[in-house]
Length: 210
Image (cartoon, rainbow, N blue to C red; front, top):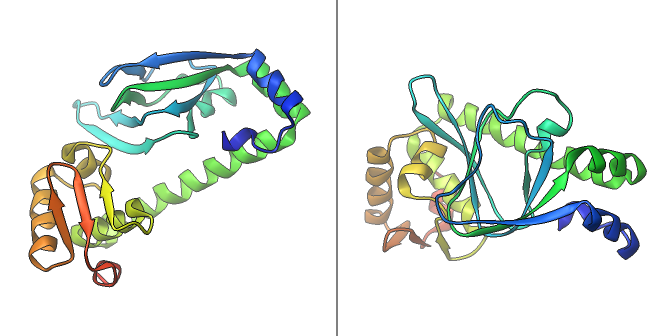
């Protein structure tokens, strides 16, 4: 797991001693807003959707986490309860690490704390970029750039989320997402295969969209 990659085998044994394993089925809630956290959850297998609910009950997907990524970290540094919801989008297995004991080890091995801070900084940057995109850029550009990021240089990508959740993450309705995907396909930029598979046909055209 990346946040522990700088530790020696002996140091990793200390982490293992305060870690337990838990599995969740598809659609199962891992934690919910208002719950006391105090644990770091590191995904071993599967993907998890992190979202928030508005007072009216509308869901906003914040991000999707996969193997090696973690959640629940903010409650390690604050007494405030969890503010979002975590749901398994497919069968998941994760390591649950006791927060107070992990904080002690962070003081002993600063590389762990540094990597947690690096991830938090990256998440903050992505959140600020998304806010900027939603306010300043059209839906088609947001979608094009999201597809390029998700593909990570590959020709074909498989959406981890449903199209409804993917649309929520991009700050648009599912109807808008469907229209924009169809438009990109008609223009020869992508090819849609099934419900979640997308082939990138013209990477330069996607990158150049304004």
